[in-house]
Structures are given as structure tokens and as C-alpha cells.
Length: 293
Length: 267
Image 1 (spheres, rainbow over the protein chains, first blue to last red):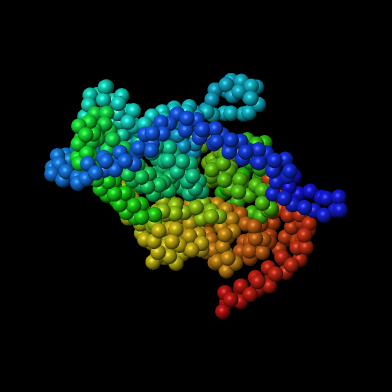
Image 2: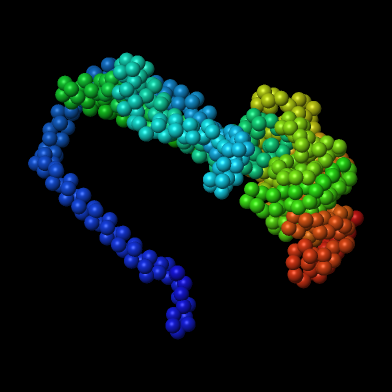
């Protein structure tokens, strides 16, 4: 107990008692030891010669990459356009699918179904809790969200290239699938945080379920929705630049062939173009976010 | 007009919020429902429009038993009951006009309400009500730009545009300063008189309640333990409702303020 009385009758207060303090010290100690052991392990498995050599090699590649081969830009217009399209369309498709999933995943909007009375009775006997209705759909919605989020878009692209063949379409689907979970998760959290009083007030007017949705819920999550959309679009621009590495279209394709032929001046130009695209994306999403808040 | 018969609510946790409440409110009568926090005041008015489903008993409005209605019938019945909330419960991101018009949702189809294509008669009425509550110039402002008193006025307009027979009012002044509280109470009571509306007003502030209503109902632990005129609220009665305390001050102050108020009104 933080508060205790000493033998002389004075009340003392400390943030933690002696045992709490000792446990914390032990945990800090354990952290330090784990860090040290891991460091030694990594160090043993590193070929330090390559690391010492790294600055020289980097400088060498840097020297060869400079100046960028500017005339190569004529061949980059189409791929960067593809990349932006993959990001934008992928985000839009993802949002279209994420919205219903989010509503089904949010505790306060996901439909519940009444349980048959005997099921209620069995559950009561087993767990001691009275459950008269059960949310059947929510676990499925959450499963979709988790599975979409657990696999990186590059891996989705690898799979999809072998399923639908190489090209922009595979990249587009990969980006969409990966983004569904992200958007749906953030959106359903926004739905769960709405002010229920406003929903109650709209219900009290005699509005139908869909009207309550449009007047009571949607206005409260619209800003969050716009924020999520541009945030994900911003991420997708970056993700779609690498999809070409596995053949799923976009500027990554050029990057890979340039890397394979050791055409460093082309690589530097591609990286520069990607940087510009990302900066533009960043700027647009910042503008949108400022406008909606 | 409104009749509650043995209305009882037991929450899932086992808490008995209301037990066998019998209450009758004739047309046009405004009553104040007083009682300590947790006495069941909010639950009582929410059981009437079934934002909370009562466990047993009946609530009858103009001959219709609300407790037995289907979803569709309930929506129909809710149009006749306007509700005003403690924290205003306006949709913060919609405009004042949209908030007022949302009171008509029970009368308008989905797509019309989706595209905000309300009938002109509704829009006329919305402007009339905004003018009446003194917020005509605020129609296009977003609700979150308004002050507390202004928001509650929008809340009143939203409830009245439903063309209700009954107002359910949940702590309308709990978040307002003393002067605004009186203005809001006065507005609600005036509106009820103009339109012959019955109203149940949950209220913490006993002196404020005594100032504006002719009938006071005291609730304690889910039971009605007082029902009478404001003058009959003696220290003994208040002790019964709220517990031991020196109530003389509360009662005296009210009488003083009441006179003041009348003088101001007469001047």
C-alpha cells in the first residue's frame, strides 16, 4: 500500500511500496541483460569486414549513380502514372469494401440476433451470465480485418501475380486487399467512439434505422473517414512504388531492371522521381486533413 | 392523456431502477420530476418513448399502449413525443437547420431526408420555430459553434417541430448557468402553454422547478413518494426524497426569487 502509518504515527505516502519497487528494478535489470545478450549474438553473426567496408562501397555506388541519367525520364512517365493509379484506385476500392465491414465490426452498429431460449439457458448454466442475443457477424468482420492486415502488400502482390498474371491489375488488387483491414479497423474504432446521445436523440424523433444512420452516425464519422482515406492513400503511394519488384506493375519494374543491369544513374533518377511523387502525396493529404478538421 | 401503469424496469445488472410506477399526466399539464441522482428519473422518461425498454407495466399515450408496439408502430408513436436532453444531444457536425429538421424524420421518407429535400411546410415551420426561440440568424451555423443556451434552444425547436403531444425533458438546465437555466425553463413552459403540451421535466434544481410548474412528482429509489403542488414541498418531504439536510434555505430562497420574477415580469 502506498499509504502506511509508521510506528511514530506519521502517515507516509510513496508512489510504490518496497516490493513494487524491487519488482521494477528486477524488470529493468532483465531488460538490460536481454539487450546485452542480443547485441553479442548479432555481433557474432555479423561479418564485420563488410560493415567496415560499407562506407567505401556506398561512396563508390554514389559516385557511379551521379549524375542521374536525366534523358531516362522519358521512359518513367508511364510507370509513375501507373503507380499513382494503383495507389488511388486501390484506396478507393478498399474504402468501398471497408465501410460495410467497419459497420459490421463496430460493437454499437453490428447487428445482434436473439438467441433461442434454450441456448440462453445452457449458457446461463455454463457461464452464469444471461445472454439473450448474440452478435454472429462481428467475428467474421474482425477476421477479414485481421487477415487483410497480417499480410504485407508485397506478399499479396507475389500471390496475385501468379493468380491473375503480372501487371497493374495484380498490384491494384494487392493494394486494395491490404488496405481494407487498415481502413476498416480505423473506421470501426471511430464508429465505436461516437457520442451515443446524438444517436439517441435522432432515434427519439421516430426516425427509421437508416435515417438514424444518416443523421446520427454518419456526420460523426465523416471527418475520421476522410482522414483515414487520405492517410491510406499516402501510404499506398509508397507501397505501390515497390510492387513492380515482383512484377505487379508501376515504377518498381524499372527500378528492378535498372538494379539488375547495375545502371546506377537510372536508379538514382527513379529514386528521385519516387521522392517527388511521395512529396506530392504528402502535400495533398496534409491539405485535405487541414481542410476537414 | 399519458398514463403509466405499474411501470417497472430492472436492468441486466439486477438493479431495479423503477418499481411499479403509476402516474397520470393530463393534456397540457407540465410536471417536474425531482429526486436524487440514480432515483430513476432518466429511466422513467426513457421508458415512455422506449429508448429503454421497460421490464413490465404499461405506458399508454392517447389510448395506445406504447410498451406493446412493434418497431414500426413505435416509430409512429415516437413522433408524438418530443425529447429534450441534458447535454442538448444535437448532431454537432450538422447545421442548426438540419438539426431542427431532423425532428421531422419520422414523417419524411428515407431518400428525401438523405438529400435534405424536406417539404416546404416543414421548412416554413422550422424557420418559425427558430424565430420563436430567437435563433433565426443562426440557421446556417454548425451546431458546434453555438453556446450551451443556444444549443438547448435548437434542441427545443427540434422537439417541437415533431408536433408532439408530450414533451419528455431530461435535465434541460443541468449544464447551463443560472440565468440561462431560467430562460430555458421559461421557454419550455411557455411553449407547452401555447401548444397545450403535456411535459415531464426531470430536474435537479428544486427551487427552479418550483418556480415554473404547478405539479411536482418526487422519485426515490424508483418509487413515487410525493405527488403534489410545489407549495406542499415541505422540508419533511424533501428530507424523505433526498435525505437529511437543512431545507429551509432552499424553500425560502425560492419564494423570494419567485416574487422577484413576477415583479420583473410585470414591469
